[in-house]
Length: 198
Image (cartoon, rainbow, N blue to C red; front, side, top):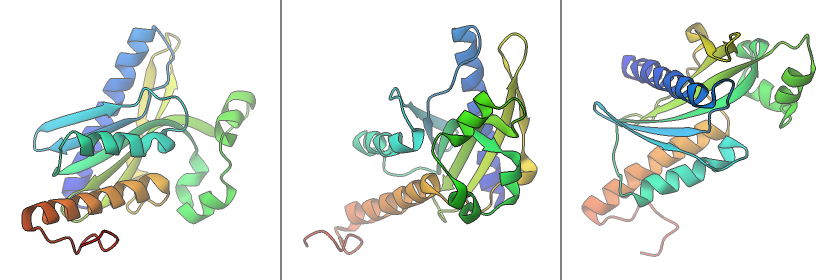
């Protein structure tokens, strides 16, 4: 991973923890963070948080449509944050191996109903850089203390240098699309959109 990507993963992970802390303080205890898309340009960060219930990855296209409709065309990085579950053993597996055994809701069910579960809660952070469409991911594990406040462990030694899956696919394709839009708007050249009528 490039230093710029690592720096953004650090910053966005901190933002994720701050957002989770604020929510837990507002709710006076345990609370799940709705998915957040973070767009970074220089020292400025724009956040879009979903109010839609359901699978956060399913809501990601709505976030990206909002960013596009707002007129934002270029940025340094874009990140996706979501509250999720993970098996620590999965940190050692490839995305393909995880996908083979994936069943929606299974990790949450195991975490909730199995007192001996190896599933943990955490904040998943995925960041894509504009310049080279480099993508990286991090999982920030947390456990709630007796007051319902999260206590974090950044699993930085397991940062994902080449994340796979729907989140990574959608975000990298969005950055690629936005680069094509910027080029087309600047030059009038629509060759980056072969599916559109010329």
